[in-house]
Image 1 (tube, rainbow, N blue to C red):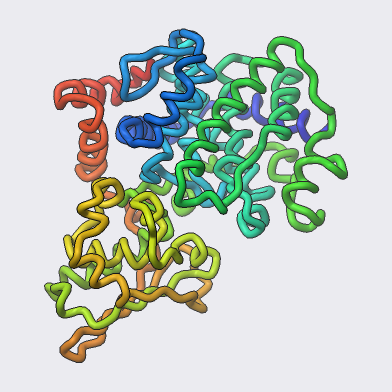
Image 2 (cartoon, rainbow, N blue to C red):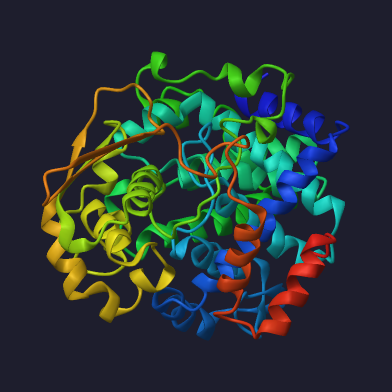
Length: 441
């Protein structure tokens, strides 16, 4: 069998497994969190610009555009909602995939669910299948792609979205293999666009392209039979040398524990609306601030250490826009020390962005690569004007593992705060209640 045929066979076999209730709980929580950040992201200028470009030529349909009263065709809905979902960089991630898993698959799922009137367990099952596919493809290729500069959220995530759509629409094995093959030519996304509106845009396009690939395959379109393993195929072009990828993760039977239930690499939720690499440093800085009751004027310097793989993404020393500040250690750490937290407004409001106290503290924040082999941690050293040296090492950010979760009340508050940007309080509360009972359509 070819790689795409094996991928399709394993995916469809997986989708028929009896899944434990915990898997559905994890999926439900991720869906709720992602819809919340999508509603918030829909109000961002980038989402508004995209709608202004798409709407004049968009076909009508049954798929919701979150944050608006509009319903459009599933393709445009996947594009608009996928972009909004990642616009604030407030969405979850997955270490197998090395990217943002829910925004890579959920907008496509919900657009199809609306179009076909599907809700409840079928949506959860499609999400879990898409998650497994994206995570396994991530195991196969992501580490190398991430290093080369590809953005696995989209180069890998598109296959998760195709997988979820194939399961939701009950495609045959042949159709699923074809859709995956088509998606190898749709895969795209580079990290040089981090800090701009184009980063979330490509997430939207990956969702849209996944639905296009699925629809084409369902209608009888063709793709090359060896688009993954061909010498000019996906693996060779995106990864390079054969030793830089391992196709066994997708071609061998998908046995063993579910990726969504991996307690250390499953779903990593965010409590700060910025790059995930900033979460461990923020946890450490805020802990020291609270413990020693630090004031900004007492700070002589702040030294942040992170793993080399994280360093390039958060080494924006002087961000020129609030969106770019989501990847700036100096801005986020200074802002946290001044206010005691980091909020959505800190990356949207010019008054927050240009706050004199924050700007004054930024030059005192430095970032370096540490020698620790933990890619999920951060070292923090704060030196005070009084001569104290305060140190903290964060093994992993709050929310980064299932054993170190963000408190349930904080997750609920996050959803309601995000939803409040697009809905009134009653609408937000009612939506949350419906989602908690699996009313996704």
